[in-house]
Length: 448
Image (cartoon, rainbow, N blue to C red; front, side):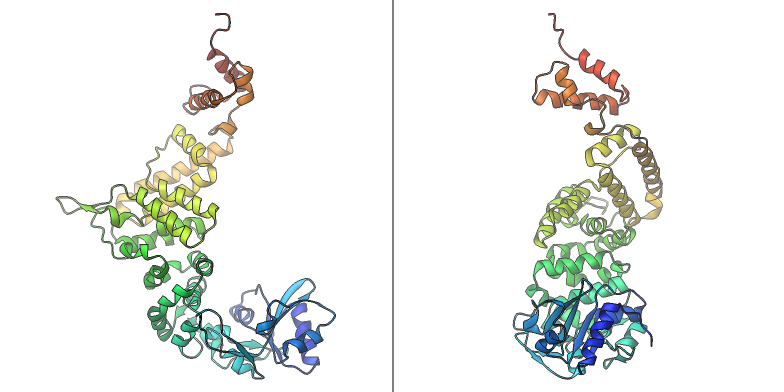
């Protein structure tokens, strides 16, 4: 078979082969070539020992940070390429890294230590594949299957639980039955995994095209690191607006949101406070009064626990806080909210409200969804026209207020906000001359 590989990787394979060593492309790059997707990284495995690899590339710039585990990174035309000696691995005492590695001469022994069959395929310079575990067949069948015994693979490194789910969500592959069972039985291994590593996998999972299906099948995995999700998974919603329970509603909203991390995280967490707020009236109807406020606190806490960056956390928390707010479809209200949140967050909020509606009883919310589309169009026009909706858009500024006779201090801000309010209400145009007159008229008569 003919596969396109970059010249740098080809030259590295040629150099190792010419020196008498076996060398293959391996792992994710081979998997992606077989999937018809352009790889991002090019990893090589070889029978050469690390010192022999270094000798082969003595004239190249090399990075030796992985030398203990047999990896030499060679920079070929400025691009890094990891070259790792065939190896087997000792026990995983910390459920993350092997206690030691042993270099071996067998490619198959090296492939046997890898996580999933689709990642245990090697590609030679001649285009020939070495696939002892049937990874090519699993790719064609769109299956995620562990190499060897699934329980052993997950107990070696608990992060593999999340990697399996991430691949399922991103590739749209099914997780093979025994592998799936082992995930359910071993998700507790995530307690040994650093929050930052879980974060990376969760973020990729959530923006995958099949994220909803993974959430539907594996809520127990997410509850391992976010136990706050547990009550939502079992929450019933006996309410005319809802045709699903709390978790299924959440999944539908995640599926309805664009594949943007902030939006998908918001939908995953927007109703996290509902179980604590549930009440049932005399007619048997469930209500969740005040749930956004509790959802905000829980979401903030959960995102901090998983080490999300401040920017992402603050945006998600802001959207969770306002996801249930009622915004009248009037120019003044839209300008006010554009000013309060900023255009990017405001349009994100409209997406959140649309996705939330898509997770409810459609016949009851269809008019609301149509109104949201009109609001979005109107907001886009306001922004495109350069209409004023914040202090920075105002045709006058603090210097103008001070020049009109207001002493520097808090009164300047109060004056500007008062002027902005009149512009938002449509009482005065955002015209510099008229606003200067307005500021002047508000000052005490200097002759008194």
